[in-house]
Length: 224
Image (cartoon, rainbow, N blue to C red; front, side, top):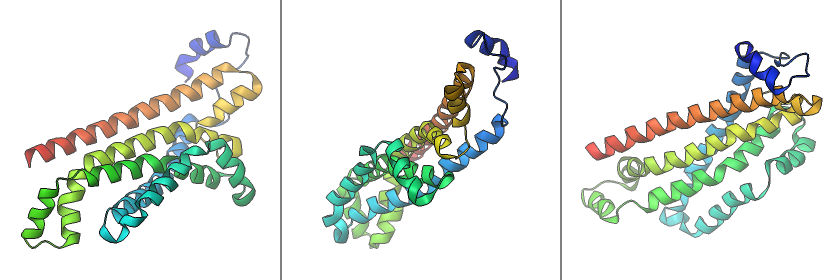
């Protein structure tokens, strides 16, 4: 950030200090990744498991319910979720993790359902004919074929939550949202730009990483 100080002086020429210094940016980055990572792990586990469960015969009756519950998470703005969670969970990291879990669930559930439902029925029939058990079919046929679509949902969920996690700074969860909130409170647009640029670069980097993983999955499926 210090290398770009002239740019930030141009953004906020009247400010005596234009570089956010209350915490190192690499520390804020680590906290940001921690919050997003924990929320992603829980959301992926719940979303993929729910998608698998309702695409089985025993759970098919619950498919509409799972879709509605997953959609419900995105009908509430993250700010509203935080406002409801703070009185129960207190200030800190936990409320923003809960908000990210609710907000990031829909893309994962939706893509898991789509990926599994689009697996060619003839392949499943052939696997049955080969004597494979339902669990073997799921692990060796359905999930590998559905993996690129599921990964696309995870990619969307994580990328959105990287930006949404900045709201955690409003409830005491220190992360890359700190410079943004501090800049808004103090009227220092240089702080806001620093936080926003860092979050944008992080989101683009993670999105590019997922794109590479998707290409590798597609190439493996094509080769097999």
